[in-house]
Structures are given as structure tokens and as C-alpha cells.
Length: 94
Image 1 (tube, rainbow, N blue to C red):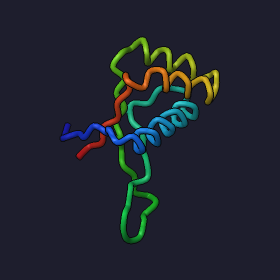
Image 2 (spheres, rainbow, N blue to C red):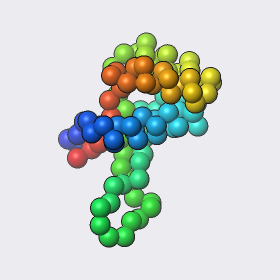
Image 3 (tube, rainbow, N blue to C red):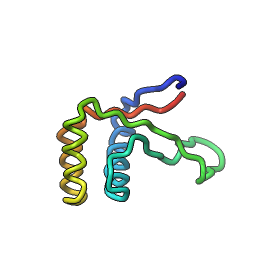
């Protein structure tokens, strides 16, 4: 499976939670992985290169709650994600 790095940086987590919400709304399901543009500090940026993040939700009931909030729209799903964010983790493959 390879080594994984748990994301703990607050700024990165904020972006990942927003991306997670947006992906859930578009796909109408709770995804197990999301993609974000790769952070490039120098040089040209290739827009087709993305980092893959695995999403883990540690409680099936919370996953069900998020799923129920998807049809209610961005605000409801965002609020549910904020409520349960301690149960949602993002991992990037090393």
C-alpha cells in the first residue's frame, strides 16, 4: 500500500475540507479519495499534476450523516463536516 503521511497542517486541512465538501456535492457520495493541485514552490507549474489524498472517516455513522447532508447543499454539508472534522483524516501517499 505504501507509506502514507497524515496531513496535520491547519492551512492545508482547511483546503482539504473545502475540497472534500465540493467533491461530495458534485459526486453525490462521500469519496474515499480527493485530488488537489500539487504545491509547487519554484519553477513552472504543471496543472495536470495533482496530489492524491485518501480520506478516512473513523465512524460509519458519521459517514452516513455526511451522506444525508449532501442533498441539503453546500452550507449543510459544510456544517456537518465542521461538526465531525475530528473524525475525518486525510493522508497523502509518500
